[in-house]
Image 1 (cartoon, rainbow, N blue to C red):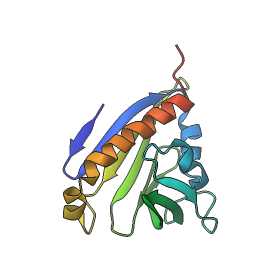
Image 2: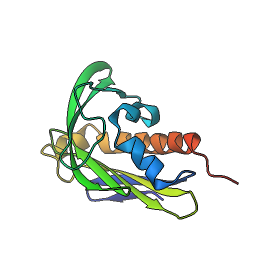
Image 3: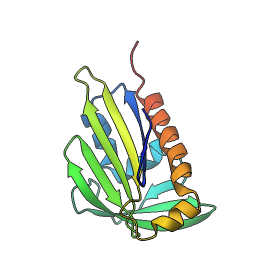
Image 4: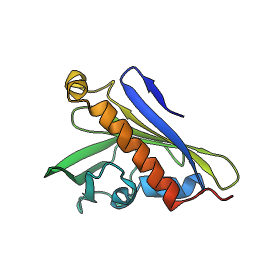
Length: 150
């Protein structure tokens, strides 16, 4: 289920794990590199929180050609169902989980640049399309990690 709206791209997959398991990975920055399909997330900064909540600030070591560091702030949060963080320039990464009640979860990841200070620049360098490809790869990795039975 792919969607592109004004300044947002997202995709969804059904994974073979309860929402709380997936949410546990998302609120632990140290686990983000395990599912990252972009190849850019290297590691969580050791100075950040071990479990994210609304308002948490956490740093990540990243790499796109050259290594760099990014600071994120959790700006949306609903225990077990939703978490989103924004970068310094205002764009957001959002994860929504819908527990299907049978041990499976529908996971939707969204790159939202509607709140970005430099949205036009992100579009100019084709970040939305690149990020959609990375979202799909991340969701595929999540399904590989937690296959749907049957």
